[in-house]
Image (cartoon, rainbow, N blue to C red):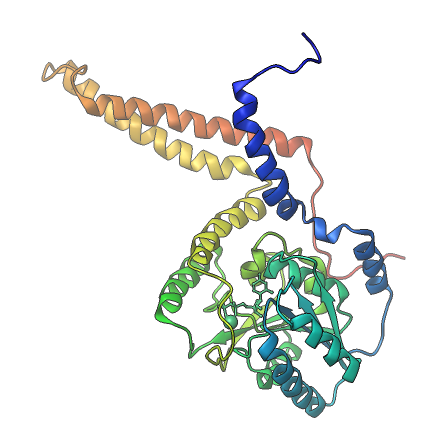
Length: 360
Ligand code: UDP
Ligand code: MG
């Protein structure tokens, strides 16, 4: 009867899955933190032209209480020496220690040190994204809060940027991290470089300098902070890399476990698909599908020839089933690609990054 409660086994299975999705994965995907009215207001605030700030330093942090004071002091030394106007934006990614208290104190002493604090931990990409939205400098420098990145490298990064680049990446040439991190990281950098065609040695470095347009044009979502240079490169920006000094972690512990590498590789696939192939899905699925199909077809053709010349019967050869399976899977991949093409045809909004516009 309609409207009355009835027992459904499907409900029992899917209801918890739905709750899990809505509560945990959903908010991350929809980036809800950006959509609050407060954020919208801040966005408008940023869009107002603010002349005069040369450098905005954006620093994401999560439970880094011991590092914040020493970091702000050394930053002040370096930035004062550079003789520029600057602001430092700390983005507290839902810290549960005393970080927020310290940020309030740092701001009280020096108004050029600003902060934004999330109610909960959203991840480094979210922190960077919100930091970028609020930064008003001509140049935006990002660095980690854990004292592993050295503020003394900022002048060199900015100098390289001024030499005609849009993004300068800090390459941790001599890295002070445990081997469990450095070796998988080398593999990650090699694969990312090979798959994306951009020659960088350290994609995941926290220390980077950007021209303002770059961070305005590129959206950071999910855990995509690792791929900012890739996105910038694909959007047509000039990316350079210089070696920078790196220190061992002095206080606290790393916020990313072994899962970072798994996530990193999955994100690489996502970024390849959503950025490179989102407008031509058949090229992605079609190639895999055709190769699988041809492989299966070749196997079965060979078996058929053997059967025709009377050598063996096909039915008792396990390879026959493998061939059939590959053919079916191949056809399915191509079909998925075609469905993808249909979807992209109905969603034709293209996004192009414009460098300059003279329109009068
Ligand atoms: N971080 C953050 N949110 C997180 C995890 C990390 O803002 O959910 C910050 C962290 O406080 C640090 C930077 O991102 O300033 C890099 O993190 P970490 O030093 O743990 O990474 P690693 O150096 O091990 O790659
Ligand atoms: Mg670190």
